[in-house]
Amino acid sequence: MKRLIISALVVWCCVGCESFTFTSNLDPDNFSNYYKPSSVETMTEEELQNVRHKSLGTVAGLACQAKDRDYIATEADARTDARIKAADMGADAIKMGRCVRLENTPACKVSITCYAEAYSVGESKH
Image 1 (cartoon, helix red, strand yellow):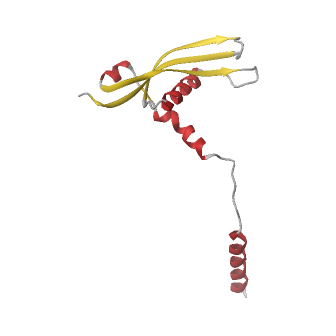
Image 2 (tube, helix red, strand yellow):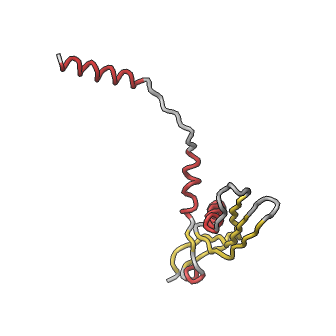
Image 3 (cartoon, one colour):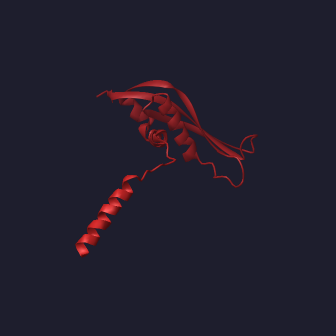
């Protein structure tokens, strides 16, 4: 009798789950955007001297705290934004330059902008 009840429950669960559907608000495009900064390596001038590289242009990453209750703008966020913009240009390396912090601008209570040069790098020169 126990076996019959267990078998019936297993069949009932399998049939009940057959029509189960799962929906999500996750967008597959967000996954590639989330990992985009990791595709761009931050390099120093000395490291760039040891590899073949081509400048793709400059980028400016921005972090903005619009209101008091908003997340605080940080240089790390501005550098990450610069890496995302470099990846959008097709770069796989970036050399960070100067970061500038401004307060009470028309758009942001605090804004930090980091400037960088985006590069396409190749194999080692040696």
